[in-house]
Image 1: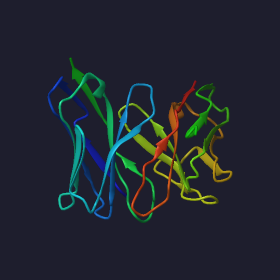
Image 2: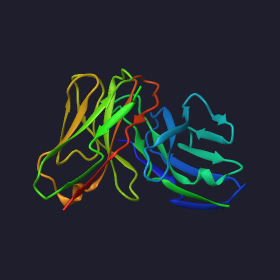
Image 3: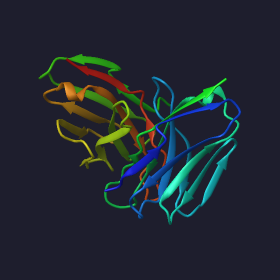
Image 4: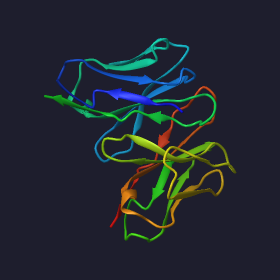
Length: 113
Length: 114
């Protein structure tokens, strides 16, 4: 089955700096890669996703890049703000077999004011 | 639209007790999922239902059963609760599709087994 590894497990940055979270996946057939943000005590919510036919996607201060050859994808947050503090999860989806997301273990991002 | 709803929000059980976690969605989604979330381990899939009438095991199905009652509802049952099942349980739903679609999560159920 699919295996998703996520690094780092914790990340602390100063407000205004950039943050980068990286994930690798094991199944080359996976074709959908979402990122979820989970604030303390809340449910995970999708912030951005990318499909395997696209190398990069951007939405305001958030961007995701995908390298299919190396089987890794990354989340980039620029101009970080205190409200970006949360746990971020990456995930991967295979088009066949178990049709459910496999999640990484999460990154706790803390933005220091 | 309420989205994905779960009941109860909190539950405390004694070892060996049984209970059912309820989940419903009003987005007409075909696929529904149950995850558990433990500290430092992300979200692990317990069971999922790709469409009404079908259910499949995920990564950690032992000790659980599910029922896809209809298109809207997907319940998770613990027949004999164990302390190892202390966790936060999330239900989610999404549109089916080979290309992948956003999963919408419920608010979660915090379960403690003593």
